[in-house]
Image 1 (cartoon, rainbow, N blue to C red):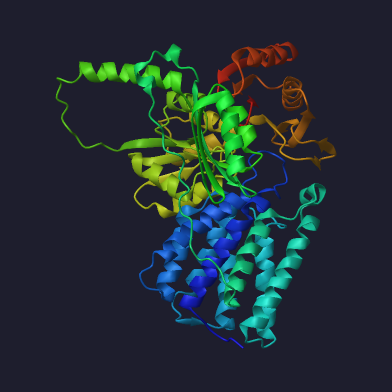
Image 2 (tube, rainbow, N blue to C red):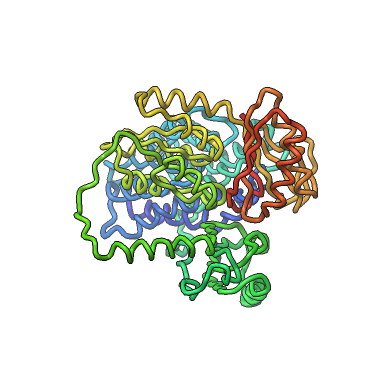
Length: 556
């Protein structure tokens, strides 16, 4: 019987837990309730724990204090998405409780689990049962029960805690009706169980590969001859990059088939497969085709789409300005802090330009399919020279990471405005008044974003049923703040149905942001359809350039 665990054993257990989660991430992604192409719980949790695993493997010497700091700091800064932030808080509470001990017994382990759950619950403003929090709490409760019963050996302790964790996970659909209707358990809870089970395997001495893959960076930009070409001569206008995290073996035959397909829709193709990670680069006029094909092999991450024609024109302008200024001597002066600054999470060239035009200082690429980490937030905050910085997450799955970054900054006043959509972010910036205090601006912006209703059009990646709606893979879906309100095989019809469901007679402004895969002519049809139904409303049409989501429509 094993009654104590030292730092080296705990280190192996942690790395094994990380590896087990990584191996199951695609399965966990598929547990996402909504069948959208950005069900990334498994990916977010994996990237979070891998950031900590990287810190652990870099330790020159393993002791409990150093191990605790590596796990806590690595996961805290690497946290992505709500599930990743909650996981990092679980680690934070756990490691704080064990850091001063040289060995852990069942009593210390139980206390650490209590602190882990307590810290995680505090990090969420409105904790919801039937989630990863419930599963963590269930295992903690079992640990307390076992300790009170006098269990001192870890073999019995871990076996019983995991068995109870599986049971609590199995009843999450009873706690969250949306899980029951979709026929899945909570994906975050499942991810936590995979971490614990992987750690248990290492405790039992099972043979495990402890090497950690840490290269999650996107494909580097590839230089072409387009710099010397006129923008109209660029054959394929969108530079498209992403990473496929495969849900099955991606062998040489798959690689050749995928390359052949990309060659049929573009050029400048690079496909590099490394175990379950496939890095992709292609120039094409229809990024959506490449993305849809890639989704057949797994989930996507680090998605990046650039309009090369637009960039080329901007580069020529900058080159001209540089040449005219070459003889001028510009003195280097320190950047003075201004009273206020703005950081916005955005996805799509058009939306980027809208935020920049409104005075946003720094744009973080992210949003759906690629949630930025706490570290990304901290890097952005460091680059904005302002006393008070307003952060606009513009996605409900990024708010926790932004809040976590806020707690780690000491030399600036960081205010996170809890914007859940891009239109809410735009409204927040528009309603900023320089003469008001930071607190008054915060209050005003929060009140204004409550008036914004948002709908988005995307496609289903699997068959399911939600809110009594039968959804088939490939169907178009209209998703509003209320959930999925329209489903069909005609994109325009779904967009109009969603818009009509969302818009009310009291709304005055309707904004349509069309994505990278939509032409202006197609978008005009939607605009005209809405105008005919609501002639008293101002309807604005703007290029968003966002991938995956064909339209983002807001009403206020």
